[in-house]
Length: 72
Image 1 (cartoon, rainbow, N blue to C red):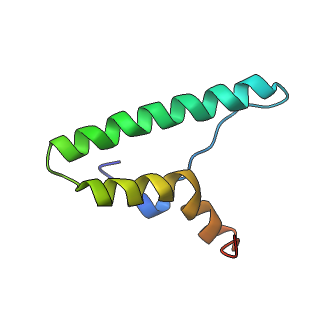
Image 2 (image 1 turned 60 degrees about the horizontal axis):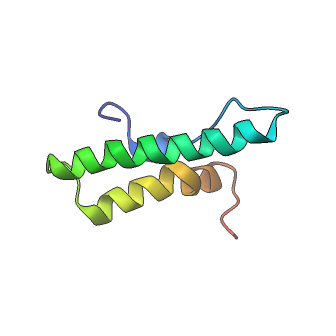
């Protein structure tokens, strides 16, 4: 996340065919993303508001912009 604009990052899992893998992938991604962003807040790299915006972008907003699905 240090080398790429966060507006270019999107969540994705390689899960397929097994519903439990979608759930676990999403759960683990949120946990890891929260840990990374918490570290950035503690280091003074991001404010809590900025971290929330980055998380929303990675988890959904960036994909909406890319695929033109902003009407949701």
